[in-house]
Amino acid sequence: MPDSKRNNSEQSLIPKLEQKLLLTKTEKTYLAVLETPFHILKNKYLPAIDMEDTYYSYNEDLHEVLNKLLPFLGLSDEEEKIAEYIIYNIDSRGKIRVTPDELVQKYSITPENADRLINIILSEFSEEIRQNSQPEEPYYIEPDVILAPDKVEVRKIEVKDPIIAKALQMREETIFKICEEVRKVNEYFLRGYRKYPQLLTMRYIAKLLGLHVSTISRAVRNKYASTPFGVLPLRFFFGKTLNKRIILEELQNILRIDESITDSYIALVLKSMGINISRRTVNKYRKMIEKKTANSEQERRLNI
Image 1 (cartoon, rainbow, N blue to C red):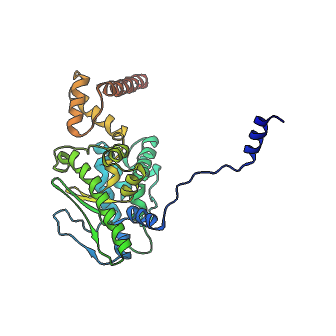
Image 2 (spheres, rainbow, N blue to C red):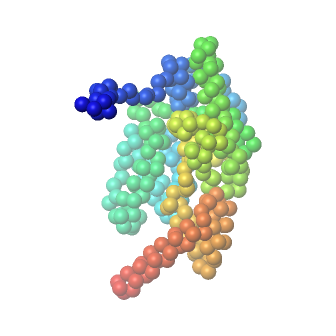
Image 3 (cartoon, one colour):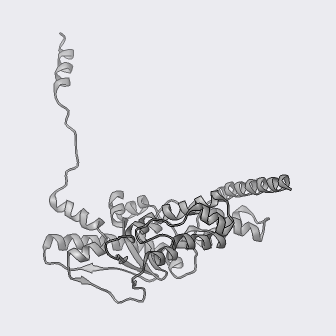
């Protein structure tokens, strides 16, 4: 057998080593503390240092929490009324007690719209429903950070164990850096000048802060911020763009006022609300709305 073939054959018998990322026990502790919400840390590592602030949260039940987040869905006034009814028919275990047929009869809407609204509530607020529907004992959202127009303050916990203390300090610094960037780009929103928040991507924040994307994800996951508008999930400030449904709803509202308005001007109006999309995207959504309107008008004529 030639030497080259023999060498290849021998190499194939050598087990391949798979490179894996190995974390030390201390590093695992740091990551675990980073992704743990404040209310769990507080119960595990006391005492916690509470902060006096104008925007400090108060205990809210599931229905209050979801109603506060309703404006972020971009629903019409009529749809919001139906959504409120759906929310008040979610029991303490997170189970919905109203059927699409009941919504059809009560609000004279189509079965498709009834299904759509129920699915919107259950999917968009799945995390809030899960965290606020514990049958054993009442659970209240405690914010991890205060996010105000002019400051960011992370809630602190003091411990004597040096490793845990260091982990908590690193958690505080990481959340502070992330929320400070959120605050900078959302100052107008936090002051009430914009209807929607300016969204950031985790990849952008990771590059800006010199951290891994997974670290940003851990820091944001299951965390809540106390804002001038109440307690909001930190994840609401992250994403590539707002929900398409919200953009279409706002675009329809603008076109109802002036159908001749240009795509460039619409993009500027949306930007003033906190919705950053290009003129080309506006044109694409505008054509979708016009096509849908034309089809509805054609169906109406046929029915007549």
